[in-house]
Image 1 (cartoon, rainbow, N blue to C red):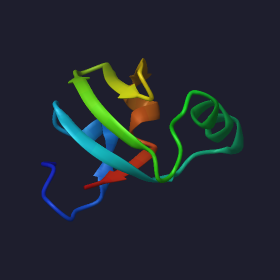
Image 2: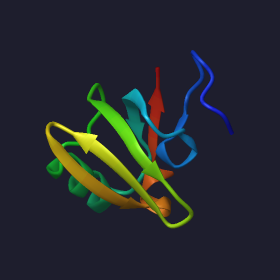
Image 3: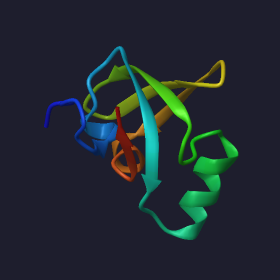
Length: 79
């Protein structure tokens, strides 16, 4: 899936070098808490640095965070 303007998708589908806004977290409570604790929450801006087969690297609040593709697929983002 490509990042088209105005479309919602997961971090796992996002192209590199894009700044996106987190819209929703579709996961169980323990994963939700983990994502919130590292700064990934609805309304937050994230920049996709690297999106590879097994890992997605994002910049959030001057931190670089590595997420597995499984976890990244639970983070819904948009333009």
